[in-house]
Amino acid sequence: MPNNRSPPAHAWAILSVAVLAVSSAGAVFMLMSEVQPLLRAAWRLQATSLILFPFFLWQLRTSDFEWDSQVVWIIIGSGACLWIHFGSWVWSLDHTSLAHSLLFVTAHPLIIVGGMAVLRMSPHRWESIGAIIGVFGAFLAVQDEGSGSVTLIGDLAAFLGAIAIVGYLAAGRNLRGERNMPLFLYAFPVTSISAVFLTIHSVVSEGTSITSAVAIDWTFGWMDSAWILLVLYLAIGPGLLGHTGINASLKWLPPLVISVSVVLEPILGGILGWLIGVQEIPGVWTWLGGPFMIIGTALAIYGTNCRLTISAPFEEQFGGES
Image (cartoon, rainbow, N blue to C red; front, side, top):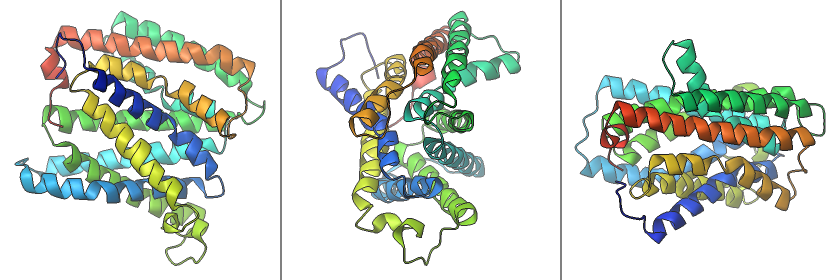
C-alpha cells in the first residue's frame, strides 16, 4: 500500500515496463492484419487464459475466498464487457489509424464523468473540466476523417471499447476492491469467458472454423508457427507483464500516478506503431485534438481521485488483495 516514503526505484521500473508493454499491443495487433479482427482478439485472450491458468489453480487451493451466485454473475458480466472491449477495439484498428484507436479507447474516464451527469451525480470540478477539454479534443481529432486511414466508424468502435471497459473496471472494483477477491481468481475466469465469447463471435460473424486447415481461419490458429510468437508476446507482454505489472505497482505507487501514466498509451503506442511501420504520421487535426484528449483524461482522473479521497479513506477506496 502506498505510504509517505518515496517509492523505491524498482516500483517505477515495474510501472514503466508495464505501461510500455500495454502500449505495444495495438501495433502488434496491426502486424497481424491478415487475420480477421475478432479472431485476433480471441487468440490473444485464449493464450492469456492458458498463461493465467496455473496461477488460478494456485490461488484456488490457497485462498479462502467465498464464492456465491452474485460473484459468478459479476464475473460473467465482466467477461462480457471485456469481450465487447477487445472485439470493438481490435476491429477499430482495421478501420481507423492506430493513434485514433488508442486515443478513443483510453477515454473511459471521460465516459465515467458523462455517466455521472446522466445519473445526476455531482462530479468533482476537475472531472467536469477534464471532460469538457476531452470532448473538445475528440471533436478536433475526428476532423481527420477521410484523411488517410481515419474513419468515423473506426473511431466510434474504439469509443465503444472505452464504454465497455467501464463495466469491466466497475466489476473489478466490486470483486477486487470491495470483496478482496484474489487477483488470479478474478483474472482467469473473466479472461476465459471473454475468450469464449470472442471465439463464438468470430465463428458466427467472420466465418472462422474449429476444423479449418488454414491458420488465419482456424479458431486456434495462433498455435501455428506463423502466429504463435506474436500471440505469445501479446499474452505475456501486454497481457501478463502489462496488466499484472500495473496491479503490482499499486503496492508502492498511488492509483492516481498509475492512471495518469496509462494515459501515455496513445503517445507511446503511436510512436511504436510508427517505428515498426504500421502507423503513418498522424494528420494535423489529430496533433491538435490528441493532446486535449490526453490532458482532459488526466484531469478527469485527477478529479476522480480528489472526489474519492474526500468521500472515503484511501484504504477503503483502493484496498484489496493482489
